[in-house]
Length: 325
Ligand code: UTP
Image (cartoon, rainbow, N blue to C red; front, side, top):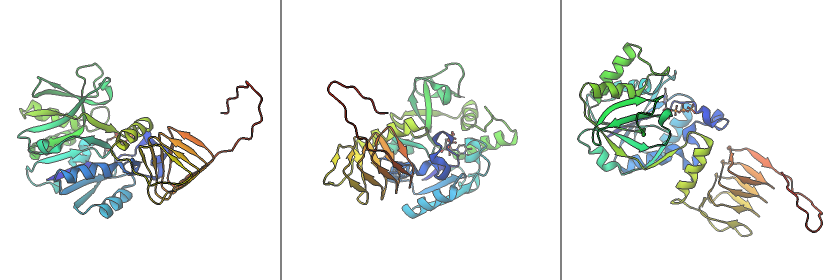
């Protein structure tokens, strides 16, 4: 089965990291975001992917084709007009009415896809969230979806659509995407996939939901770091380094150089990174980065960046209290 993976976005909320790297290639728990997604898709039997690229698309294309041996089609979306527009661009590469899985390229999930891909109806991954205002939400009768609303201003449902969509009959989706584009129907300035799906529901298409409890957002620095922490729990990897203290879970590749370092918990270290006289926890350190004489916490250090602190020389008397900032 084919998957459509839109990754054309700029990733503004993850700047400055996304100035030089596409969001989906940012390392979380030892591999790029999109690597986590691809591994799950391939394990579920997806053997072909249509990837919508745009911003720094060549880098995504090179990484995917050099790491996975499935058939890829890359579609370039040069203007970011919204998710519905991105999916609409894939129409020439989809066979008439074949079933499709759509997954956002920045959504790492932990869900059994087997029943989803065998679903007799179209079905959307959902999760209960406290503040649904930045999501599309589903109003259901407990079984079927009655209505979808994109980024509701008033709280109509807490069931957020989290970026996993199974379309049982893709022709109806593309007919409705054509309709949105032909009639320039946008919501909040963009062509919304939720609007196309809502038109399908209004026309009588049955949509169900499936729970995605393991849904790990990577769109902002704080969610990237909490996703790193969660994924490291099942993916801790390090060798022994003499003279260093490692508190798992961590991801430290074989070629990282550590000297006099205290690493972890929840630290991902990039390939060929050099860490000297430093303490690092709850952080992501990029490939080839250099970290010297510093303590880092809740930090994201880009590839090949270098950060050096000052060792302090302090001579203080009994009962003193000094805070060095
Ligand atoms: P987001 O809006 O969450 O991601 O889109 P973004 O644009 O990359 O990040 P910010 O908002 O600027 O920080 C969700 C997914 O849909 C893709 C994005 O690449 C991302 O994977 N997308 C969105 C497209 O491919 N094309 C679009 O027109 C819109």
